[in-house]
Amino acid sequence: MKKTIHSEHGAIIAGLLTELRNQAGMTQRDLATKLDVAHALVANWELGERRVDLAEFYWICEACGASAESEASKLIKAFAKLDA
Image 1 (cartoon, rainbow, N blue to C red):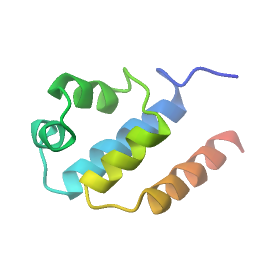
Image 2: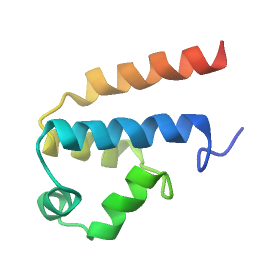
Image 3: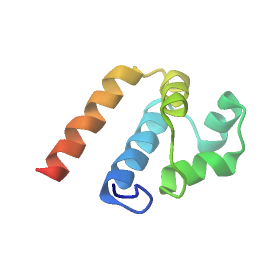
Image 4: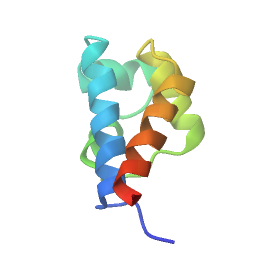
């Protein structure tokens, strides 16, 4: 199994997280406050420096007003294109 850190797959995840936050009209600090985490953690997620587990992904989506199910589906489709 490949590592996601610094991979194309990881970059897709990081991009989606940044997009969700921006669409919600939040700064990284806003999202960090809403999730009760350090600002650096949000920055590391968005830079692809730290992996996001499934529960964190769900909480991030909820905080941004997005459907975790719908966003996960987008990720899977993007991954499938990479692996084709």
